[in-house]
Length: 61
Image (cartoon, rainbow, N blue to C red; front, side, top):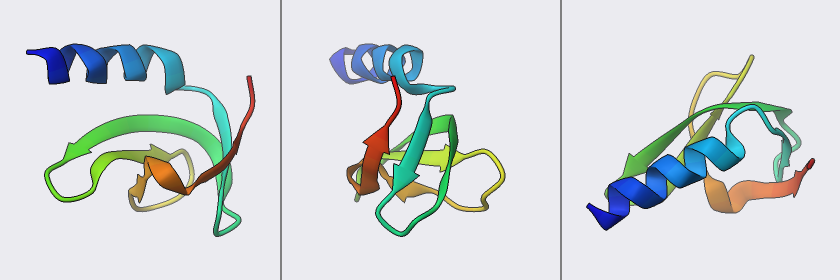
């Protein structure tokens, strides 16, 4: 239950925020995913795919 509570808290904090990833992709966070192998992953509006949260280079506040 703690993991789901933390996921929900992360969703409230991060969805809609503008980010730049280490590979240069930029946009706002659309969804968060929990992956058994990689942990927390994000999808970005306008880009296909999911990236580990660790690839965020900059997040606007």
